Image 1 (cartoon, rainbow, N blue to C red):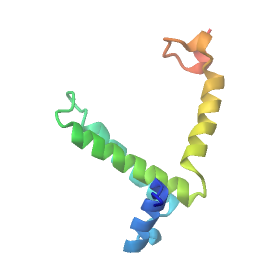
Image 2: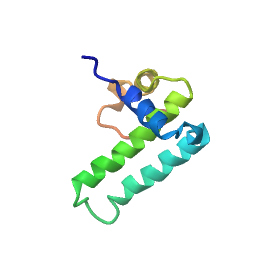
Image 3: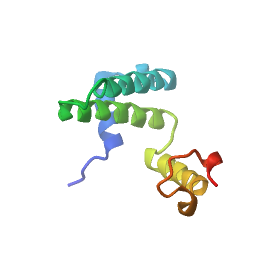
Image 4: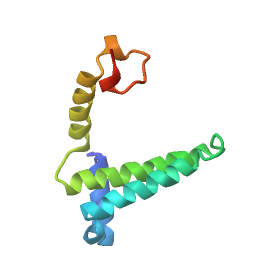
Length: 107
């Protein structure tokens, strides 16, 4: 039995509701920002009391990020691996280990 990938499940969910018409890159980018704000709100003033709320807000951020990557014809995994390679180059272990400085401020 074939298990659907995340993006396949998201495409099906959107298609069933005819929501693709609303999934422009601009709208999806806005949605990521809105949901990220809701995730951040879970941490406002204190540690979150409801871990399930944090999990679900994170899922909303990831959902819109996957939709945006798909709308741009990109693979989320490929994008993250490409960015990880760039970040790995910018933050070599010998200079960045235990150091939170931005790459252009590393010794």
